[in-house]
Amino acid sequence: MSGRSVTRRNVMRGAVLLGVGVAAGGVNLSARSPAHAAVPSPTIHGTDAWNARPSRTAVTVRDHRPDKIIVHHTATGNRDDLSLDWAYTLSRAIQNWHMDHNGWIDTGQNFTISRGGHITEGRHRSLETLRGGVSFVHGAHAGPANGSSIGIENEGAYVSVAPTDTLYESLVDFCAYTCHQYDVEPARIFGHRDFMSTQCPGNVLYGMLPQLRRDVADRLGQSPPPLRWPTVIRGDGGERVRTVQHLLRHHGAGIAADGGFGPITENAVKAFQTDAALNADGVVRQETWQELILALRRGSAGEGVRAVQRQLHYQGFTTAVDGQFGPGTDRSVREFQARHGLTASGVVEPPTWRALVA
Ligand SMILES: [Zn+2]
Image 1 (cartoon, rainbow, N blue to C red):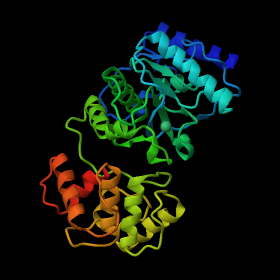
Image 2 (image 1 turned 90 degrees about the horizontal axis):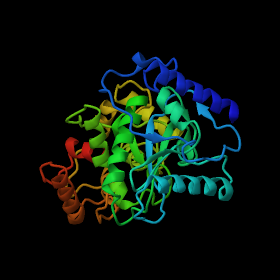
Image 3 (image 1 turned 90 degrees about the vertical axis):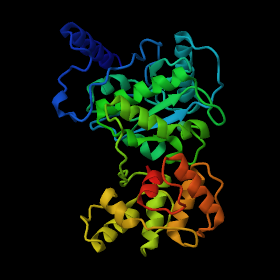
Image 4 (image 1 turned 135 degrees about the vertical axis):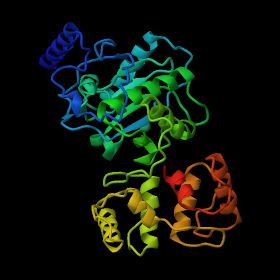
């Protein structure tokens, strides 16, 4: 580790001496999307600041950008100590647990935010690569998504209560900066449970993610944030993938609605795109969504209804997932529409579909 640490210090010192901030180091800033306004970096305390142990072996640096951010909660106590000292202590405790109990090479997540809003680097080199904006550190926080995401652990347990305002504000700052550095769409901020079977990041924090995406979009100068159909691609997981799968099944695909976007789903998307005279690239974007969805109302039945019911259920509505659009589903749809500023018609048309999967 020492060789790399020296290199890193030199890079940081060089950047400071040049007076250009730590985003220097030969990175081609012009490669970044001009759509994003400049976003200042929040203060992020590196592993040196909190006296991290060296990683057991060299961390893996991916030579491409991550395409998403994954939000976690630590599921530890909701302490009242908001100090920087405590944030450092917490970072050390997490690293010890991950190395000594889990047997990992280092802290699992890339970054951590304490309840006091202090942001610390988790796995070594996560900060240096974030500054560079072209590579990132492969962490251990979200199974199959580790190789394509930045993991952010938020101190506390958010199953039934919300995080502190200070933590939330730092999370917005951190996500905005990270989206800017890596050119990640705010819509691609996810919860851990979107990729694995887990409660994480708790129902309350998970329920705050739509607001977080809006706040981050705001910060990036995308105001008002465009309501876009999300892009769903191979490697993705969770309810949005399940929705795609149910809709593909509606259109005759013999695939499982298991929430995992693997080669079978990709082939089904390509076949559907071919039939619909779309570019058969296997990626679900606006044009494909618009062909996949169908208008649903009370009395409808089948896979499309199941897709709607699963989304509603997942988003906290007490809706049966039985494929029958009855009075219960009708009530939930109207309530969902009202909450999202849509006409509470009970009819699931494109704007409602888009809000459901956004
Ligand atoms: Zn998690």
